[in-house]
Image 1 (spheres, rainbow, N blue to C red):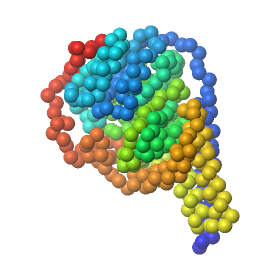
Image 2: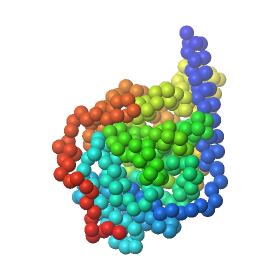
Image 3: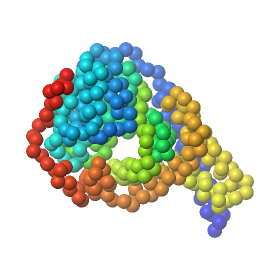
Image 4: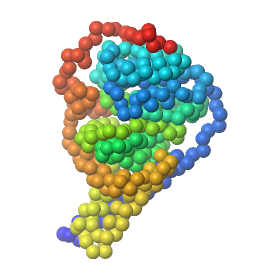
Length: 399
């Protein structure tokens, strides 16, 4: 009995290590791609939904005020006119009065996904055909818009997404989040592009044309789903468009996360992945060899047990190497030592995400169905207020 269990664990662990190494190779292949040549720079409208003060929000917004790009506008939208993020936005606009920023109040809920409701309001006020969706917790370099526009210059490309780099950790939860983003997430998304030809779109950074968006159903088609980014990417690919990946660094700033926030987020993400592609959900543990290696070490003992621990060290080394490639700096020893703990915790969130049927998101508890379709369980009265029909522009700060 024990020998059978050892054989199963050894086979699973070896397969997992092979898949991890292969996905690392795929990620490095895309990350090492030479930048494209200079392309046209069409005017771009950036849609940036706001809710609360994210880590580093002031500097995040500043990075969009300092873009080296000939013509663009940034539409900042919030559901609540008193949202504290708007005060930060006004501070940035005061420091850079020439920045093409406008603030819009977007109180109308069009569906169950509040981010999509804001995007619908913002895109209606966009002046340009090229539209870029950008989350409030991302920070970019001055060449970001040029890099994104270069990818969309190919008429066969309908949507451009980005490689996301986690940075800024100053707490345990934030360190775990950035470790996961810079290892499991980047490996799985980029290996899907290399091996399956399928781009996993991440909504923190997406560039598209308004006409193409309308042709695949627009934001209205994803009003009531949780994984609006993935499903939009899928709609573009099913319509015959290519989805391109820009390797221009887009940093998501995670500084002061509690441990429970990391767990809650990835239980929710696991539920999303399970609902959009069940097969991928079942394969996920093979991209995380550490739990299997620990089990093998405990069960087998002896030389095989020590070999399993060497496999854990190999996984730590792979994560450190990928972190260095993405962030341009060595991983701290504190983060290196957290890799096994993060991987075991990630496996636990995978298990819980496979069982749970509800999500707690933005203060709302909802049931999640097939295709990540949302169904409210407890409805907030304030969240359903629809007194306003159209977004209101803050005239003091309109560009």
